[in-house]
Length: 269
Image (cartoon, rainbow, N blue to C red):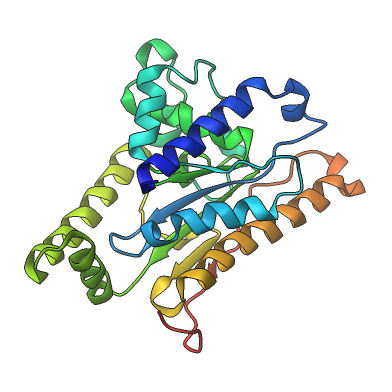
């Protein structure tokens, strides 16, 4: 099965499960499981770890028939075009954001549906799958769009530019000059997208729980670092919500814990 067919099959399974799930699963008494957003520099290696990451995330779930699914630009576009997510996601609550958000993003996400642009439809899909849990959203300013969702963990993948060019060169079988151009232009395009639609800086570490330098980790280790960090964070959050102090009302917005996982002594790829 090709990588694309694999991701499509997982998405379909995810949507079928959500369509038939008991509504009580998503109630306040039974909050959803965690979701994950991943932002990445071009060539930082996400494509190498997509499958093992989804499978490892499944293995960490304690509920019945776990079914994590990945949603990238193409798959989100299919959801929007096919109107697979007709419900409107919950309103964006900036006061609950895990890091500061811009006024422009608040305005974009508060537009009435009659004024929605393609970005708003995509943002609605992102928020809806993340609110349901077990969704891995790649790019599309996902960390900004879901900054207020308490169940969503944000990751940024980075790597040295030389190694990223080498990865793109091998993957697309192009020469070094073309690979360098792909890396440069893709990074700029992603930064422009985030700035235009979210008013944010894609490279600002404050917008992520975890910043991972993939140059210093084998792929299997990177998978565990991402998934285990998210799992521990979700477990700690669940414990906090169940503690007696959780009934005092909403806490002040948190800036999140930024972990720079760039360790010199980690095993290189």
